[in-house]
Every structure is written in C-alpha cells, then in structure tokens.
Image (cartoon, rainbow, N blue to C red; front, side):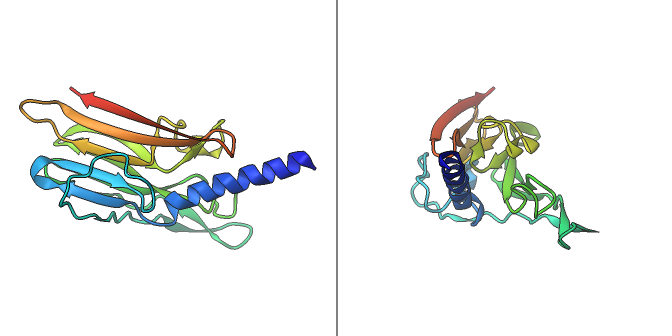
Length: 191
C-alpha cells in the first residue's frame, strides 16, 4: 500500500509540475536592436534580467499534425508539425511542437511541448532544446533527449558583437524522484 501511495504521489507531482510548462505557450521578449531574446513560462520566476521596456508576448509554436491511422481507442496518432521561424535582430529561432509518444493514449502521450533552436546568422548557438521539465531517472523523456541537458525551462540568447562572443543562458528544472524538483542554470559563451 505504501509503495502505491508513493508511486501515485510521484506521478501526480511529475504531472502537476509538467502541466505548468505545457498548458500555456511560453512568453517571449525580443530586443531586435541588440539581437537578444528571452523565453520563459507565465507564472514562473524569470531567472534572467529581461531588459526594461521590452514587451513580452506569447511565442506561437505550431501544433503537431494528426495521422490518418487511428489508435486502438480511435484517436489519431501524432505526426511532427511544421517548423516556425521567429526573427529577433540577427537571431533566428526555429520553433516546433514535440511529443514523447505519438500515441496520445499511451504513456505521457497527452503532453506536447515546444522546442527551439537558435541561430546567429547561419551559426548554430543552441541545438534543439525542449522547453519543459524533464524526469529523471531515464523515462519516456528519453524519446526526445537527455534529461536535463536537452531541456530548459527558460533561456536567454544574445548574438555576438565586435567586442563579445554570443551568449546563451539556460535555466533547467528536472524532476529526480517525483517529489524532488531540482533547478540549475548554465551560462555558455559561444566563440
């Protein structure tokens, strides 16, 4: 009985934490003159200094598509959706919707989350990164990438200038046991 309660609490905590990041689209602030962008989720602490005076808007991420093939329960399987490009000065964001299970009725099949790649001109600053809390130890999240390296809950990117290299700052949150949420940040300079 005790194991069942622990498992139920772990599943609820994981789902509740994840829902904060997947139910609503992320927020987006762009300083085009400085080629600087920030992405975060409503209701979460902004871990980075978003420049005063920048208006935050919703980041539109295209949804996945439905296949013609149906699951045993009669729901359409999911297919990857289109990639949307968003410009901010010299930075280009490639946005798309990701999912962990093409069967929406399967394990974690209901969750869709955005992913982003960031380029400075043609140079890749940030490889495809999921915008979500991921679960450890390895789980269905491995279908997308390694937890927490391939996920972020907030990010900021700035293009290179004559006096400084490009910079990407990531905030990561991972669920290590269902009840233990860990937060960390990474600051990278891209030569």
